[in-house]
Each structure stands twice: as structure tokens, then as C-alpha cells.
Image (cartoon, rainbow, N blue to C red; front, side, top):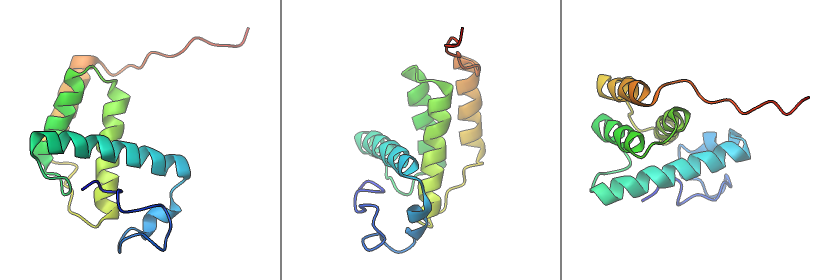
Length: 123
């Protein structure tokens, strides 16, 4: 089941431990929901549990996103979202585990870390 599938952003319907989600901005909630759905769908396709995600599953997700050519910032955002959702649900999430750190380093080495900046619109 998706982390946020049972919620509708109303404090009356949030499960226990999710009250902190009411403090998030609407766009943050939307981004968390999108990232949660993406990770949950990927985990279900691989037969992995989500939540809680194991560090090995998160590292495999990072590797999968890297293989798809996603941008480094998008991959780091996905890892942030997974960690945030685990904290909101009071689930253990060892985000600093070596396997995740190494997957992020491998991603940075493969894709590079510099983001391409858009051209200036001022003349």
C-alpha cells in the first residue's frame, strides 16, 4: 500500500503519527505523494516491501533511476522523500547506511553532479 494512499491531507483522516504532514506546504505534499507512488510502484513490481523500505531496496531504486538516466537532483529528491515518509510514519529508516551512500556516490560518478542551468531570460 502506498504511504499516502489512505490520506487526503485532512487532519481528520490522517493515521496516527502523520500529523506532521499537516505542516507541509501543498507542493511539498504533492511532491511527497508523487515520489511515494513512484517508489511504491517500483517496489511492488520488484516484489519488495514498501514501507518500510530496506536500505538495500533504496540503493537498488537509486541504481534503477540512474540506469533510466534521471537527473541527480531528481534521484536525491526521491531518497529525501522516502526518508521523509519513513520519519512521518515513525518507521526506522537508516538513511545514512553505507549501501545508500555508495549508491548515491555511484550515481554522482555516473551522471555527474553539475546541473545544467537554463539560459538567462534577462537582456
